[in-house]
Image 1 (cartoon, rainbow, N blue to C red):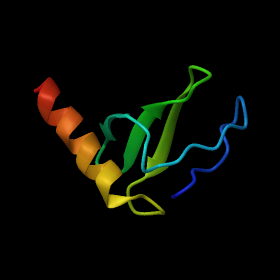
Image 2 (image 1 turned 120 degrees about the vertical axis):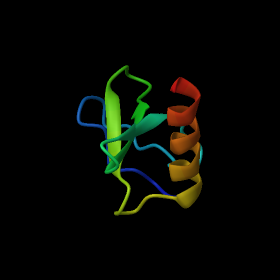
Image 3 (image 1 turned 60 degrees about the vertical axis):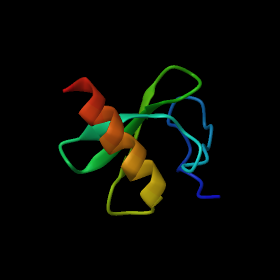
Length: 64
C-alpha cells in the first residue's frame, strides 16, 4: 500500500494503489478526486505506483 500525502482540505490519506485517477496533468502528475470533493495530485516521478500511472494514461486515452 502506497499512501498519499494528506489532503489539504480534509487530511485524508489515500492508498495510491486503489484510487480512481482522472488522468495525467501535463505529463507530470496523476489527478484524482478526494472523498471530500477536492481534486488531488501526485507527481508521476515521486512516490507514484506504476499501476496508478497506467490507469491514468488509460483514462486519458478514453477521452481522446
